[in-house]
Image (cartoon, rainbow, N blue to C red; front, side, top):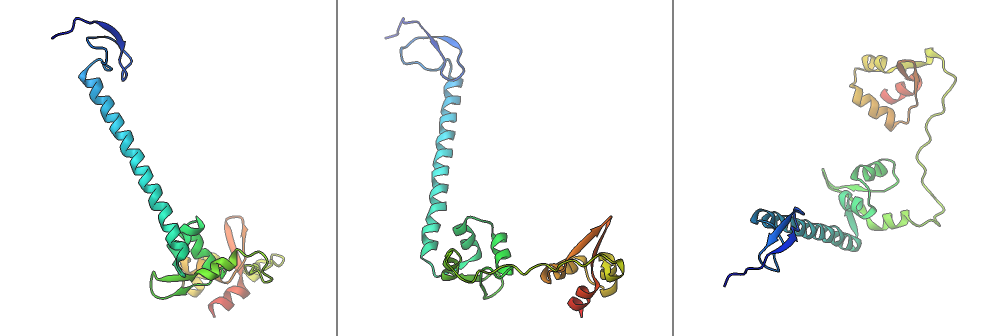
Length: 187
């Protein structure tokens, strides 16, 4: 039962003309048929994976909304921001948290809800940065001078400057900090 039909077709995969022997032939060769199948299978896997990822992302948000205490990661997911942003808000005392242990920081859900109530009378502002006096080089240390005088690491100095809101002044290639404020911070 062979067919003597010869139909001019265009391959669905490579778009080349070929002569088909049946009316349902879609591909010019086994190679094109296999490649098309692999492409369809790959697209289906990607689509399925994307749906699963979307479900995984949406599911925790519903669970998180019911919790009374949240971890930093959960809060970041809930607020759609990075965990570093949450830690920064904690450091600025914008968000109150309780550190139970290393990597066990918990935030009360009601505190987060209070952040988004705009009718609050008291709104916490970050502490103002020290106002600069007129620049007199005798009243300032360079970063290198502070490191050598107090024998601290550069990272420690930077954290201390940030924690105490000490203003830095850049003049040329040097960065200066107030002698008075640095002495208070390290003494």
